Image (tube, rainbow, N blue to C red; front, top):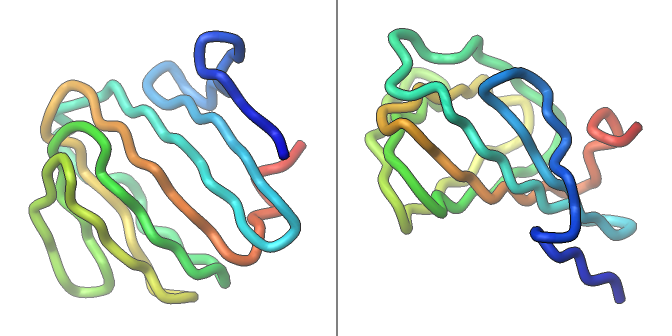
Length: 111
């Protein structure tokens, strides 16, 4: 069993407005994503992947674009993304924290 304490770890900074922390086992990955670019004038570029995804909105407000649908989400909401479905977000609040879970593990996230 691993314990990852936020106060004892540095996040992986992927851009000036996006950082993440990752924990994973053989078949499951959880990623804490922090966005500080809100309100964004445009959504992120849509992407897809072969992984199942469940995301919990831990903080903030955003639009989720899932396939051809647009959803307004706030703290406490949860969404699911089936494999290969294009999706992206647009932040509305200054800070958005998402807790993503993926199966299988996103090996492209590992260094």
